[in-house]
Image (cartoon, rainbow, N blue to C red; front, top):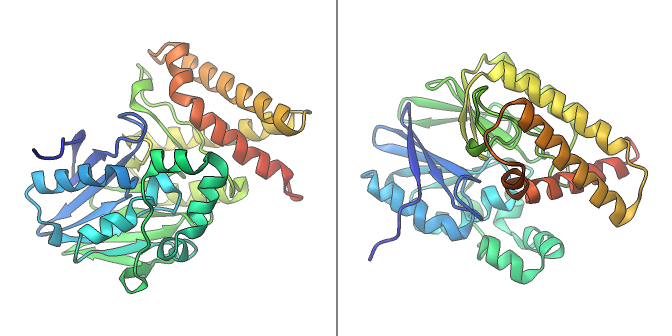
Length: 319
């Protein structure tokens, strides 16, 4: 009996959005980009989702040998945790990763230790599965301006800090789109209403840097993109409007964080509650069809992580 296929949506331009089924459908995805007889995977998901990704590749009539690149936008485990297992299954693929992140995928011990410190070993295994090292000779460290080719299709890597210093994005001129990882925020399709997508910041610890993020948004817009391919989740358009929304959200997050007087656990709980309330108010303004109860359920982990990241930012001397 074969592996059950995860949801896979044809977006045109040779791009398929594949649900990596983290926690629940619709939370995280990766993208299969195909040009002729060559293909790339942008994002890896977790090891637990790798069988589903491989099943979709094969269902699309591709052989594993045709995957030329595996491209996580950064090394947070929901984006890169499955990279090692995926590379073992794709004999001709090269891993393309930010120079600041490469060593952590070649030797993932620090990634594992960091996640274990936050969640505990049992939870890390449950959420991410095994995190497998990658041979250095299979890794391309792609700095700003690096160009990749799938036959005659060029992918341009640009450095996009703000969410993390080890974050890049991938510009695909053929679709006039960026694969943005987390640096164009998150936007779950379940929240879509008559006004379209709702975009929210992702201030996951430990490298939230608002000034760098503002510069990244400027750089995105300089390409006049028509669409953004988010890891959380799917393709969004109306790019200038959503970029303005994200800028405002980042400013509001900083204001909320700076206005909290408590310290320690009390600060964290107060900030998390404030971020959840802020998000619900935003969804109301955008006429999202979901109930507050469902929205809180979907956003609970995101807002916990966002609060943690804002606290790290608050505690830096420069903040």
